[in-house]
Length: 146
Image (cartoon, rainbow, N blue to C red; front, side, top):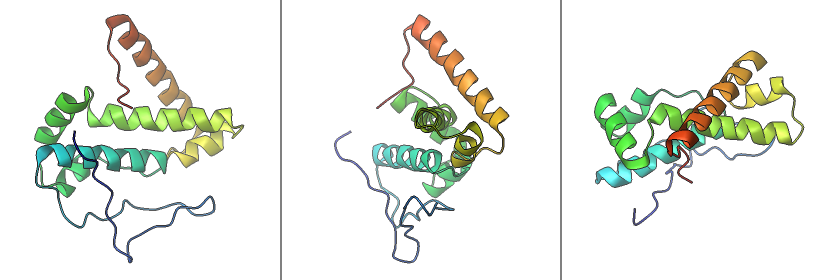
């Protein structure tokens, strides 16, 4: 991929991110990229942004934002990045949660910061991601693209 696509915002929709404030929605897309490659890069950025900021997002919402069908988007995302959009979103959320836990944040706080309601959901996510990572290592796959 030759060039990075930045998340585009307008002054009205820009959310300055500080430790005291948390965005409640994704930045608006001003112009949908023309090429499939650029759309997929933007989709990955949007999924990462949502996961890192505790925003709940559905794959079909990302696809619709980029003028793509949900199934076409999911197939193309998997072909480009080696995992489904949902797996990528969960991987980023799990990585963010592990970072927060290493910093000494409680399980409850970490869960809420990545968009989960309870510590039990966080434990389930981390357990599931760990199991998949172990299986992928045995099979020679790597779900992490960065």
